[in-house]
Image 1: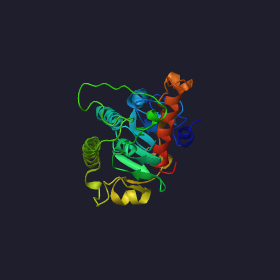
Image 2: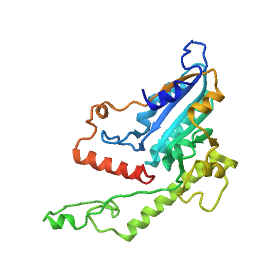
Image 3: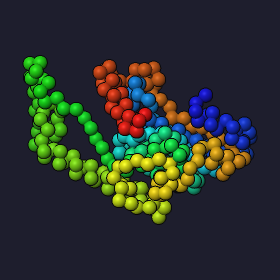
Length: 281
């Protein structure tokens, strides 16, 4: 039994599965947001992985609300946007409220997902926010020479090999990357303002990429209150049946065969570990 199942098993109405029972659907969004899932990761979020769960969640006839249980340090901005937009599309079609519940962390892209909800709740110890953009990589400009390896790179287009890890970093490439970050940051801020509206208390550090615990997040208007899934749903929908829709892992990931090369899988797992470790997890 998953953690979500344990939480929801005690909510009134969980055992009453009559056809005429009102339903609150729960979707768990756990992991780094990335278009490329890895069998060595702690779970990943992307539109392909969560589409079936979202469709099932919003497909109930007597649906009263959908709850998103979010535990994510963020990741790819495009996948964050795609998943959030899909949630809003389904919510608007069904005309039902969406409630988000932050667990350990709903930061960066994880907070982007949370903002797809009409209301956001978190635990006092949850880490929320990180409204910013970050990218990282590795540079090996001297590695090939050290081992006597000649690299042959041919391009058509002056900027085709920007930020090549085996070439020295160029100032103009870094400036280009910073400009991209600025544009993505502006889109992120715009999304948060659109979804949170006048609930936000805009301070100097609100959009700097900082992270706050639950109580401070309430003060800043990043979330609507302190509470967990069982408490809030039990109070708001006391007679509703809770239906959990878990995202399905790809077949190869379930078999532990998700990456074509072991080195690639290990590197991906390291990068995802770095994403979690920013928040002490």
